[in-house]
Image (cartoon, rainbow, N blue to C red; front, side, top):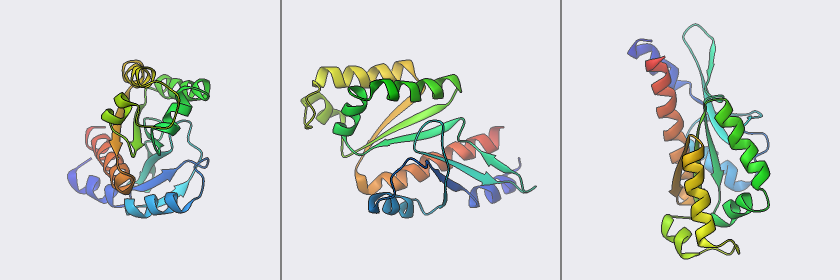
Length: 170
């Protein structure tokens, strides 16, 4: 695609929100923060992805190759690594089988909180950080920590840049 076609396609970037994401005030605020139009659609993995419309009218959807899995804090992540580990593993295995890149976006957290155990879960800091690093090694996963108030902006930026790369480089 030439730069003008890429630019036009990026203007129609649409956020895909998984249908299993609960419709809450926080979700609506996060979506507004992206500044993107959105659709609710079942995703095979992750909570968010994107699609766009090309000049010829066809839809270009990256949900099978890029997604963002968002967690509101370390406690929610700990639950995924403990009680929900089988389900969480299956989700990442589906992404790996598809050759997809998954961003694990964790709000209200950072490495210091993970290492110091600054969360309510009984999961030990050693087990939590080991699981985080195992996910980095095992899956095509990127871990990003952020504040809740910036998660919408980060979601938009990740999906915009991933879409741009795919449009420019096939």
